[in-house]
Image (cartoon, rainbow, N blue to C red):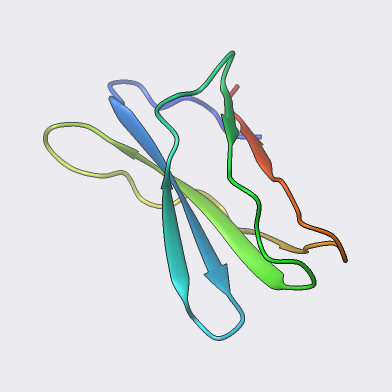
Length: 81
């Protein structure tokens, strides 16, 4: 769970795999503070962070969450609280 950032205009989820490959997802279409990511590749160790952006600058990344995706496609939800 993540706290909303005062003044944030956009949120981006950053997903990094164990080889350092980075994917960035736009979380601006949140519903009730939940950011839904597209299906991610199965059986992967992934690290998730969230950044808030406004017209001046991005925030520091959130604390990282690392998890392994399941054997089937994996959906990940980020909840802003």
